[in-house]
Length: 409
Image (cartoon, rainbow, N blue to C red; front, side, top):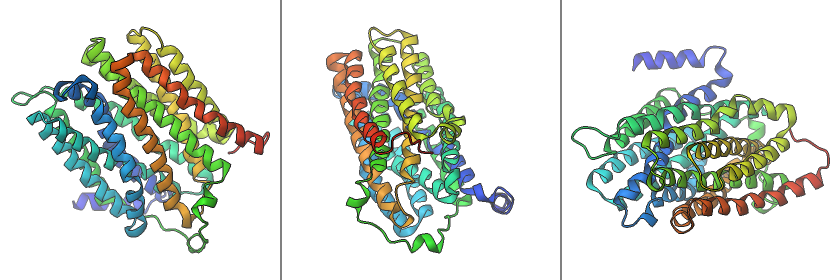
């Protein structure tokens, strides 16, 4: 513990100090964010084995999204009352308990306990989503897009580590299949919790920012930029959740691809979600956030085109890679816009409303995945993605009309 504390002191007293929040939260997120990829890979597969019927196979993944939406406002309000660190520690403690409960549920064959564990993992993810706002508050405004994209690089570690842990420990001697995967998740969550306990400190908000008067929420929500910011994240998450939830079940259970191939496709998708962060933050500074959002929309349409028909392994892979890149552009663009639409005194309530809408509507897409897949097959999932994409067009049109020729940086 003494070594940890001396390392912490070093981090906070060298030239990296302006970026200490980014560094610490990036490290914690590298481990904490593995929970969702593990559940994405195995949730539908485990569900297909222990659920009452195949129609319910993807229910744990949908319940995870519902867990995010239900905790979005409480997580933000908890941090407004007690500070970011208290919220992050509470969320991480929930994640450790959820992973252990998931292992127990699989061991006992209880689908209902597995759904409860998935809900708790979703609760944790709501706290994890607040990492991006903590980073945005800790750096100058012009640095926000680049620092947010750097934080998202933690997803690369999660993409490699999470599914690999899930696959490697899926068969452990003396345990039912996949129990070891969730015990591995518990270890990863514990590492993230330890990093936060030792290294994280709350960022200070300047007195001038604290004294800004807060506007009514109805007035804030009328801003075209805020509407576009929320719409971008809603579309990105909803389409991503719909297709990603259906893919492992469609590949492994229906088209009988191996678990290794399914793991590779899921890992490729998650890498595609976060690898563009190596340059997407700089792209926003160069060409503006509007063009990033427009590009994300076009890439999502390409995902549907590639995935349509009777997909083989490479069709699954291509569609999932495009899905990841499109999500990155829409989510990063939407988050960047969001941070420009509220005052410091308004940040917690706007962030809470944003995440509630984003993950509440994402839950609709996730809930529909299993039913669509069972009733209409893979192409039903692809077809249902299109209405979500159409939602983004009016918001883009309104912003472009109100600010013709303006590129928002």
